[in-house]
Image (cartoon, rainbow, N blue to C red; front, side, top):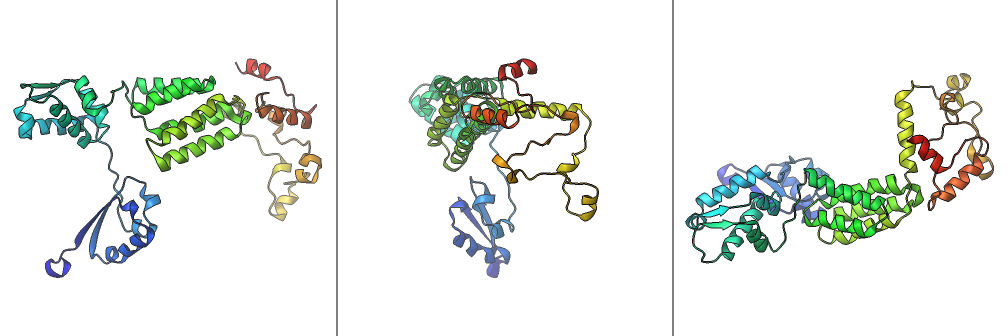
Length: 348
């Protein structure tokens, strides 16, 4: 093309993420010298799937899902321009169902309408497409769900509270409701990572690892198989012993930081990389914990202004009980640990 017409060749590669490194490397020279104009399409994150040298020579454009207005305009144009649909005088009785089934994809909306019209066969015009006909055409029940609305937040709230309430059956039920309605599985997986720390915490430290692994698996595998992994993670979190001690610790610490003026770092905790800093007593009297029995030395680490403050008050649930027992033994007569019930009453 360039030799005969003075124009570069446009090379379009669909699903370019399927090209291995060697295949992508082969494109570098012809892209760089302008022999071809490369257009690559991918449903994956190009930062992970396209080699850096090739990616740096390209401009990344993100194509977003169509909104409901876009879907409606495209469908109405098809109803007006397509000879078959126009002849049958197709009318849409339930646009919300069209939007849900389309899920941002105009092709899916048009295919569903085409199948719905086929189901009505030789019915006399006008053909009115209802929710029931759409569900039959799509071979699925259209659940009431709005990804950005109240129902979306109601369902995720029910899921979170079921996990927190240690009911694995309810957790799976609400999760299934969201997935069947088209919720992004990564949204649910992210919430489980937060749940693992906020509501399980150190009562079962493995919960965070499982939730994080679940998100990774969901990212790599996708629907529908990732439902199995999500079910495993949700039931584990729901059945695990619960503690919000870590959540309460950072909340109380942040409250103090916001309400009190900045206080200096105690001298013995300061970094002293230079001789001048050492002369100013930076790092003076600091004791290296690993040089002491149990790798512990009973020295103050908080500023005097908040000395004796308890932010992390471990519960007696699961693994956290052993953490609590150890801290009580190490800081006996130094830190005023209280029972978790007393701590909860004080925080209320």
